[in-house]
Picture 1 (cartoon, rainbow, N blue to C red):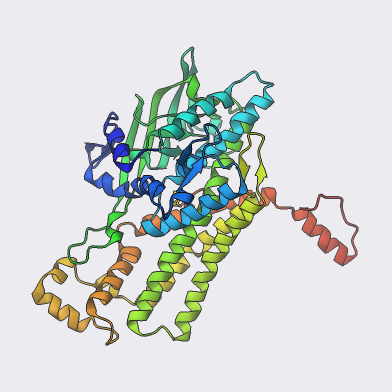
Picture 2: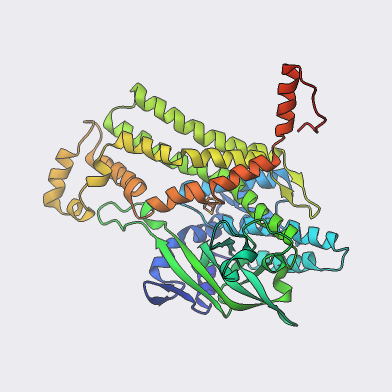
Length: 483
Ligand code: SF4
């Protein structure tokens, strides 16, 4: 394992290929240092006695202690620890810890590389290639970004039917050195500060789409890769320095302009069936990660709601208690779905544990359906103050601070600084630069809601439910396998 300092030094040695606000960006640009704070935290917690049991694992390849963010889940306990780690670290972050992207990709690839070799009767060597890659990834404690979401073009057309076939990442050439790929992956969280871009298709593919069923991983500064960056970082504090101002998030639109991927980094090619499975597996693992981070984000929203209620003197009011009970229900039901999906996980032929599809997806769906409602509750309890409170400079000026202390008092036994800080936190959450990021990610992260519905419907034994109804109605039952 490496330290966060060593990670930053490694990033600095990469070739610059990230652009933001019209400038070529250094990977350790101060704005990126805020955005990558949570990635740095994932290195720090691995040696912190409080977290290291959750934040480290034993590699099934080398037997060494590795960062859990590079681990392929071998047991139910691994899945449970990954989920708990995600909740714990997300609480520390206040936003999104980001490194789940790589671990979720890697777990999916560990499965499909083995299945491809089994299917091909040992004529391919995807799994051995992948294991060699993974061993290096673990030994060097690398950070992977999930470059999955294609730009998709006309939404009713399949990849091979698009006017421009590059609207989905595809292979444009195969030669002795490897495959040449072209396309653009959007929403690449971690893009500007990852070691590796881990790439899979983002949808189901048909037999005509062999060129689009490509999985690989390459260093993020490979020639031909260009990243256009969007960063959401909190407003710096001047009067009330706090943890919340230290954590942001950045994404890239990642362009692959005829990029050569050497064969030892190609983990699947020209197999639409397993390309489709790779897409679904990343989404499944990421939804399992969501059952850790979304409860944490509800913890943050409900904690802030409760703090505002406390300083405002409404803690015993029934309307507030009902609202808090709703938030508790969301957090703990989503978390419970992740636990259930781990306990009902199955083992793939590679040895990787696959969490249950239904439990993962219903949990993620429940979180997505409620995210704006949770913001609504915090907003309701706060009133308008988070939106209209003066800038930090006024709080830092003793002349205005005296007025603000006097007039922003709430309960007489709560000092004004506590009130100011509680509402500044509420402002960061409800009306800060990171707000829309967390809201939109709360709906679409890990796949849009329709994809959850598709996954649920494709895997749920609805015929068995019809048989229940048939029996009760006196209609002959059909022979189906009960879940
Ligand atoms: Fe991890 Fe959640 Fe962020 Fe996804 S949204 S990277 S699961 S913390």
